[in-house]
Length: 294
Image (cartoon, rainbow, N blue to C red; front, side):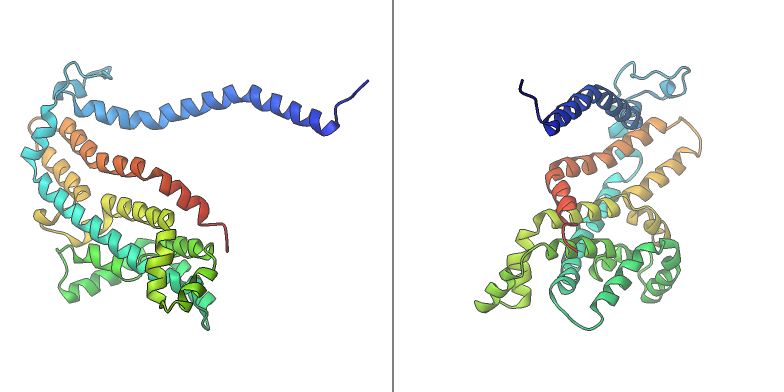
């Protein structure tokens, strides 16, 4: 009588247990998805409600009539076009600065050998443990002495001074996964360090660079703390600070504007969602591959 190998039986039993537990896993994932998605769905639906529907009890989930005019009213009551232009300016230029400077620094740590390289790299990583509240006061004093307060310069130019410790770490880890033979072959053909970086390593590092771009854009798009410290004039406000300004004007009295605040929040969130889903493949690949080699 033929018998199955023990290993084969163990694999079959494990597969049976895994398949029997999959429905519970899917159920738990669905429940968690609903829980985490519900606040955003509520925000979107509230953006289409009339003012009197917001404070009704019990609160209705769906609006009686979708008020598309709420989004138009937001642009009429506040200079959201100015906020949008300021935010796009800060986010786009900062993304460029983070990618360029972080790539240069990461390339130096990944490819060049010099005394104290590891110590300097650990020093760069130590910046990650410093909260913004520790460095914001000396930065404020520097920018005040330069006459940059109430301008967009304090929000943009720091991106061109290194690109951030996390971005440097991410790109450095990815550069280490690329074989040095590529550099040596390019040097034989007469290529210099900058040409090797921008024409050979950078095209091969698209997933990591895309990940840096996504993180940088999200940070600068949603940044509230730094604009709150440096900006005073309404015409210089970014979207995050503009929402606070819109909230303050709504609290001065008159008709409630929570539905308009929700509409403004939705419009601020849409570009972020589109960016993430359009670059999701590069984002996942960059995070996965950046830690393969130390």
